[in-house]
Image (cartoon, rainbow, N blue to C red):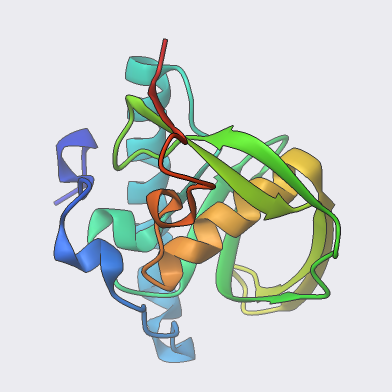
Length: 162
């Protein structure tokens, strides 16, 4: 049964704090179904809340190292690895589909290189910076059971979305 907005795990759900298992090559046929669900739910979030550039599989209870981005094109990121994060950091207000009305001030690497497998199981390498670097770090954190609330710069780093 396809996933919907009501299937997003919300802040406090124990599954959001679990480290995800790698996607196995034998699971590649399931990836297409998972990505369809991720895409559909992200579109619902965009329609309701006005944001959403990426979503991680564990946010829908799929406890696999997979996330989906929809920037200038759709991207499937399987078993990612962050390499060469920059020393330079920057701060921004982060949001999350698992708590859509809350913004959290976080510090992220200005740039990094992401190694991953695409939906065809081909190895890829992608250098990202600024807003896309932040997005990749946010989604990658989900795969390790880390939420942006856990990366808040201090106890005053929270505010409601205007």
